[in-house]
Length: 183
Length: 226
Ligand SMILES: [Zn+2]
Image 1 (cartoon, chains in turn blue, orange):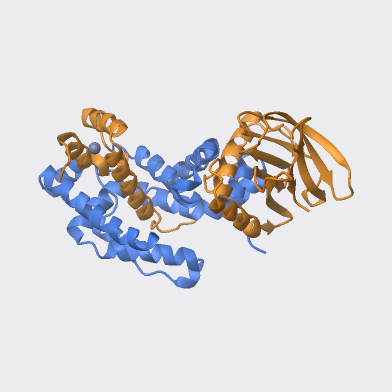
Image 2 (cartoon, each protein chain N blue to C red; image 1 turned 45 degrees about the vertical axis):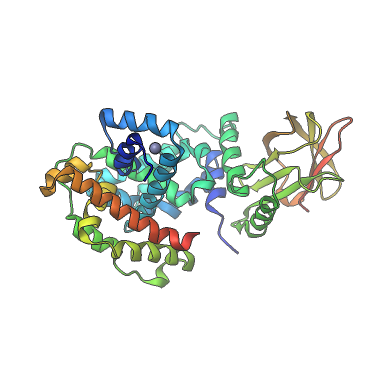
């Protein structure tokens, strides 16, 4: 027996099937809450953000577009945006970006997740690991903490143009490495 | 590079646009340019895909024990007993389903499309007595004019997506059960060969032999489940 697909749980949720909704929440709560906690760093606020993200997913189930990626990606993008909104006026980032990067790329136990998912994640970890810190730092600050190039420039005492070009080069390198095996 | 000045300025801002942190006038100018420039839109979607991938790396963390209950309460505010299924819920289900099951290729009717639908049918899953099945809708002469989906759950429901009917108009939708009863379950409008419709049903999904769409003067379309 295989578990129900994400899509069918989402459909169940959209038509008011409480058990499908419960299964969907159970399947994703650790990832949604984990991402929210990474961004906002305050457990109570992270739970609010995570809850809001599930509600938004439910409200926008009709906008889910399978061409653009898996349910996980879609749900976590909703979560990231909600989390960044929740800390928009924060002055300090909760964790040094290099420390966060080290956490993101840390080796994981292959037996802890399904093989295909592990392969995808390991591929992304490998791509990020290869970036020089001067590129990964602004990329991570922008992606996980919602900082603009200007914010990063002020924080790190760099010209805005330098930050922008490092971000672009970093994302370009990631795109090349991630695209290489997707196609 | 043959990038125009406007492209260059937009490219500068794409990472911040993709990350949803771009602000002010520069953002508005870049969005206006994106509306006109396919190359920049393509670049934006590639950068967005990279950011989406990075976000997947966030470490997992279990929320507190009451979390699931509180989310479920938020999802179903004021539910006195069984809530009737709303039409908008079906619109949502329709979009999710059709996109999910055909990879968004509905309406293009390629052999890839049909192959994908077949794969989904093979892998669609069974758990806890709930399951989801899909089947091609065909006529005597056309192999695939759409897809039918059925979900066994509470409630159980069926959903029909007609993508290339040879005859438009209002079709009577019937369930044919495995013991050969025909049950009218509603009407599905088809315009320019396309239409979609769904309803909750009382019949267990495993008792459905086929679903058919019948209209006088038109070939009967049928999806075989049994
Ligand atoms: Zn352009």
